[in-house]
Image 1 (spheres, rainbow, N blue to C red):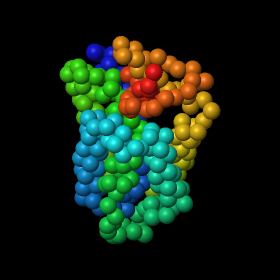
Image 2 (cartoon, rainbow, N blue to C red):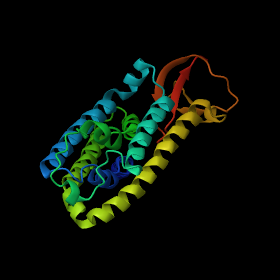
Image 3 (tube, rainbow, N blue to C red):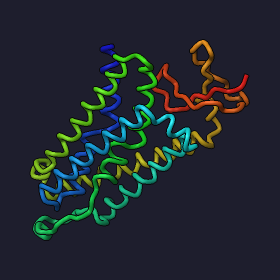
Amino acid sequence: MVDFLLYSFIVLFVVVDPVGTAALFVTMTRDAAPEYRRRMARRAYFLSTMILVLFAFGGERLLTLLGITLPAFRIGGGILLFLLAADIVFDRNSGLHDVAESENIEVHKDISVFPLAFPLIAGPGAMITVILLMGQAGTELVAVSIVLGMLTVVLAITWGLLLQSSRLMALLGVTGTNVISRLLSILLVALAVQLVLDGLHQAFGPSGHEQRFDLLQDGTVKKFPHTASWGTTIHHRYSTDTLQKYAVYYRNA
């Protein structure tokens, strides 16, 4: 269980990326009042917690009911991230101005829902990861508690870093914030493009069948060859033997 605890924490920390999110939060709220930053951080924390907890318990069923595939989910999240990064790169409503020029400007835009809670904190990667970790935990109460506990810890760390964003701003300064924001936005563009490419590859790639599995009646997971033809999908599940980002399908024998 200790290994699963560490594994859950590391995976969630990497996917949620509290440090990177805090740095982007600095960029988006650099001209805002401290109270505004605290309010946005608080709202984003509670919203992202609600989103990820809901996906932990009902994400798989929700996607199935809506008929949304994982490739479509990744493509949509990638497009949203790309638009956000483009705004920062081209300085469109991103707040990248000298403090002396706009220190009295009141920021009215509510960024707690988009892009802070989604897709930066509770993005497609975090949602999918939570679903997969809960699948690994199964019905074992201790394992489920570990996943939820590590999710709470990672989100609390993220909230704490968001609340300390003003100190990061003071440390980095105007020039440092501008430089780092541009570099981070370029990385964000790359991440967004990768999400879209992964989604397209899963949906249309020639090797997509290689990542699909049949879950046998005895509970074992059998990898099908890429030449196998697929029958009727009965239920949408996820591989629990590894952190597999691809769907597992029952099919008619």
